[in-house]
Length: 445
Image (cartoon, rainbow, N blue to C red; front, top):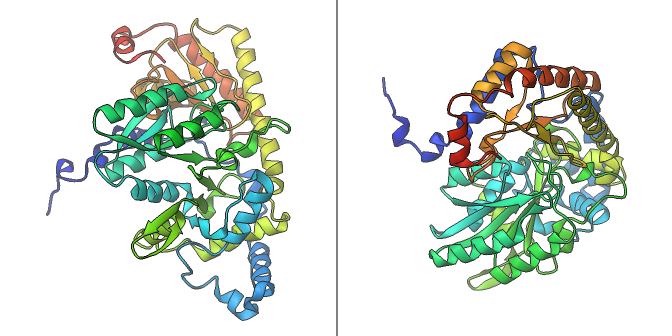
């Protein structure tokens, strides 16, 4: 029997982030009755009564009256379809209406989730060994995993309570130049980022775009959680402020429609010059790459998403309104439950942030929030959470955990926080041997 050594396979298979994700899935499987603050999955309630047949009919009727006729419109669901997508115009109209992002449908690619969009954009932009991707630290593991798979170097840039530190990013650009490299792109999730819930302040957004223009890099904007902003607290997407076409905007319908559709999109309206031909949008190049990866995004899934949008007046905001209320309810409930538990007494050094939207709360501990601590939490107290260290490409986060409130009911949140509080009182006041050394080596953030 052929035996392959992992050492001779691609280095990404030894990425510790993949190991941590595998461990988290394993421990959730071993403790199925534990209350879990670990997954950032959308709540199932909004899609329990989805009438998928109605949405398919809604899309095909729209396509038929748009000039295809009933027979050709129906066939759209059964054929491969163009790599760039079938529903680009519907999505472009929704982005223009709701977010002020004015993009031609030809500047969009409809992808198999946001993850494919990230992969395609990195494959196009990171073209040489000296090209580097800057990421916020902490950041979503999907982008760093994609970079690892492509062999792309990553430079972590710290964030604070107001989001990505633009001055630190400017210094990272200078440091890259001194070493003969260049920051080609910077990934950021400006609204209630996964994992930490951070939101980029309004004043930092134009500063980031000015730096991108000055240093000649593109900003990869991940917009998964902006829809959860409280009414009146919305901030413009980076792409809506993008007069210089420096932003590649990435989105997903997983949270506002349903995750099983696996439909995302990327807005890439930057011009690409080609030898002996007219310039084309970067989206056209991404579509060419897509033909070598997934070929096309499922037309049936695209039609479901388009049908849902059309039934809500073509508006993402209208479609996501009830879901936004649900997630704000859960987040507020989690914060109140943590406050009650804190008032009852928690070990010194246990603290958490208070995001205004999104799915996640970040909690700091006086002890390492590692796999061993998670195992004790699951086995002894029936509560799960996510260690933050894998989200920190710069090596921090060892004493930080993430709590996700998106998938739970309020009573489950209450009971989960009660269990978490009991666990912390027992396990977060006695640093284990070596904890001080670990904190000194990598920081206790």
